[in-house]
Structures are given as C-alpha cells and as structure tokens.
Length: 395
Ligand SMILES: Cc1cc2nc3c(=O)[nH]c(=O)nc-3n(C[C@H](O)[C@H](O)[C@H](O)COP(=O)(O)O)c2cc1C
Image (cartoon, rainbow, N blue to C red; front, side):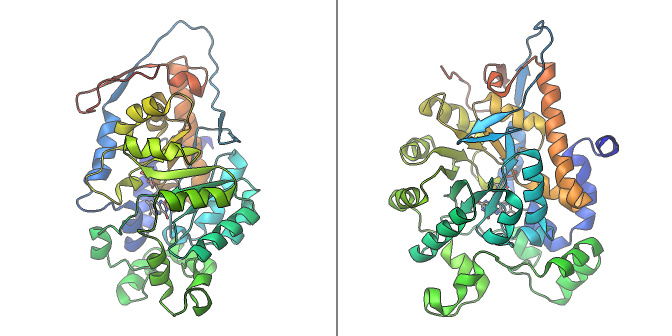
C-alpha cells in the first residue's frame, strides 16, 4: 500500500513502532543474539562492505524476480526462515505468515518448536509449506514428526544442524525470559503495557509448543517432564551424517541442511541432501561465527554453479538479499524482519515487509540493468578489505 510505503519505506523504519508494541521479554527473545552480540553486529558489517559496479546502456530492462528452487516455483527469491515460539513474539504469527506466503508465493518454514502445530498451520499453507526439523533424540518421535509433516502437505524438509548445544543467550536471562513464559509480576507488567500483544495473546492462547507438546506424555518417552524441558531435551546433540541419511531416506522429498558455514561440511552435505542452507542462526548460537556471506563464495565454488544454496542471517533489506544472490546464493531466507512487520502493524505488517523487499529488489535490478535473478551472479562486485575473502570466481 502506497501510504505504508511512504511512511515505512524500509524495515528499519518499522522498528521503533515494533519495539514499542512488544513486551520486553518478547522483544529480547526476537532481537537478542548470544554472548556479546558480536555475530549479529558482524553479519551487518559484512553486508555493509559489499559494493557493486553497475553496467549501463542495456536498453529497456524489465526485471523479473521469479525463482525456482527444489522443484518449487516462487514469485520472489526470498522466504520466511523457521522461527520457534513464533506466537510468543506476535500472537497468531504462524497463521498470518503462512497466509501471506501463499498469497505472494514465497516459502514459509514452520519450526518444530513453533507455537501452532503442523496440522493447524497446514490449513493456511495450501500444500506449499516447508517444515523445519530439530532432530529429536527419540527416533519414534522423529519419524512421527516426518509423517505428520508429509501427510499435511509440507513440501520441503529443513534439518537444522547448528544447535549441538543450547547457547547461553545472556540477554534472555537478563530479561527473565523463560520458555514457556512464566506468569510472574514482571512478565504481567511488561505484557500489560503492550495491549495489542496482550489482547492478541488472550485471543490466540498462551504460547506453547503446538507440534511437540503431544510427545511430552508418558506414552512417548516413559516419564513426565515439563513440556518445555521435554521439547528442549529432544533438540540437541543428536545429529550426525548417519542420522541425516536416515532422515533423507524417510522423507522421500527435498531435504535442506540448515546452519552450515564450513565448506567441508557443505561438500559432505551435498552428497546426502538436496540443498545446503548457510546460516549462523541469526547470530544466536556461536558468537564468534563468521557471517555465512563470507563463506558463501568458496562454498559456491566447491559445490559448482548449480547445487542449490540458501542463505540467511542478517539479510534485512532488498539490498542485502541482492548481495547474497550476487555472491552465489540461489535463495535468501529472513527471520526477524517479518516479525518486526507483524509487531509494528499486525497482520498487514508481514505483507508490508514483503512489499518493501520486493520494491527494493526491483529498484536495484532496474538500477543495474539486471533482467532476472540469475543475472545477479554475473555482476561486478567489489569487497572492502574487511570482507576477508578477496577472490571470487565461480566459473
Ligand atoms: C527468535 C528466533 C527463533 C528462531 N528459532 C529457530 C528455530 O526454531 N529453528 C531454526 O532452524 N532456526 C531458528 N531461528 C533462526 C532462523 O531460522 C534464522 O536462521 C535467523 O533468524 C536468520 O537471521 P535473521 O533473523 O537476521 O534474518 C530463530 C531465529 C530467531 C530470531
């Protein structure tokens, strides 16, 4: 909508309003990294150090954003990354994001630990959702999750690799964030001063683990644990290449391995899965991780020009997305921006973030006379010294 574009032309223009409308615990959950937030800061600074020298005189170029990946056709080269406890950030987020993704034809990835379940969200996804698996220790649970996702029309499976341990998330400790949120005086106060969030939560229900909660009873694991503790206990340390191969064999469809940064891991993964997804988890796991953008060029070189590569972590504008595509990614996922949109403007905010990205991307492509997404890889890119890789050569 034009008036929204004039008022909030960039995602950062939505930020102050989003921060005002989010309770402190939800805002810290969404925005914090880990350790000293170095990885988050670094993700951004790497993006700021990439430049493009345009070529002109190509006549009338009409840019086209359509993209194919993993057998899916999308209208744009970006999608929504999996985010856990989604409705803790903004009540009903899973529903709003999946509806928006179907309307605009882009992928929505539902996290294993989202608040709405595989089944609930599938009602809005029109068989075009992607499901993200945190590899459970219990293989019966794993197989059941895969069956539920498959039976409910999810097309692509994302397996997340980058949580071998929980990260310390110091800012969450300081903000008193617990999962699920504890109802104490502090959280009640923070919720009460954010009426839109509170009313939404009353209507939507208290945030829970919609998909995982059913496994926390004795039938599945033999003893009672708290639901949050159980979901957490299932999610770490159990992934290795054999486990991944089993998942690939069971899923019988496209599998993406998320959270890689090292080129040797990418090469090993490419022998098992259909796509590698470079990510440092938005700076939430290992505070000294590089930006995946720094490792993208060498991974692209190792995997060749055609192996599908997705990337995320810090791509919060059309310009950022464009830089990832120029450096060799096929597709870009983004986490926090869509939640900034929802928090600032409600349901329409997710559409607005999509519109911003699309508008920014189209404008850049017109500026540089690029006709389609694949032509972005052929642009002349310069990197400052801060981008420690100084050689880029795909061919
Ligand atoms: C609040 C939050 C929760 C997340 N939960 C998950 C999750 O459940 N599964 C997963 O694979 N990644 C999760 N991620 C990581 C995102 O999928 C993605 O890698 C990250 O958000 C990308 O960085 P960006 O937010 O800067 O775009 C989460 C990220 C955030 C910010």
